[in-house]
Picture 1: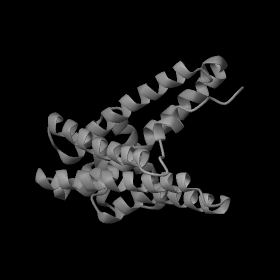
Picture 2 (picture 1 turned 120 degrees about the vertical axis):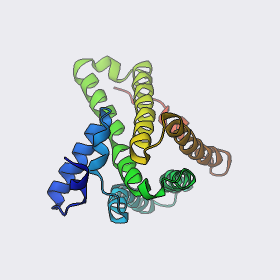
Picture 3 (picture 1 turned 45 degrees about the vertical axis):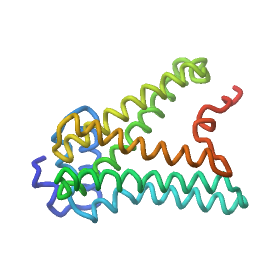
Length: 209
């Protein structure tokens, strides 16, 4: 695929194929994958759509089950974290005179962010099939989480470098700024009522076999 092909009209099926191909290329460290994403506001909105749909489902589920301040806070934090990533990266792109490239970068970042989650699910499923005991082992699951998190940080760095055409140092700084801002949101949520603690929820007790 050439860079110009990402700007040609395509069908929903070919668009999905193009995006998946781009994510897989970026996921294995191929800079050419960035060309699979359009540099338009419409492409960015399409990339936001899956997360927005997920947030709506979570919100509706919360309201159906009854008012729960912790669950509502959880949904609001997820929405805020998504918007924070976009705002921080846009300000950084503007500061580095890369604002013209930002829509493509943000689109690639949002689509690529699903890859670590898919990989973690695949790894856990394989563990469950081949080593059932490890699938319920806290150290093993913690190892998977750490590995996926490190890969996610690298992927965010690589997408920033490829998408904004910046140096590795600037890309690393952008990753730190984005994750620092998101971490601040979760810290505020933990400190203020209803004291939603995402880390405690993630590292909660494992289900009994």
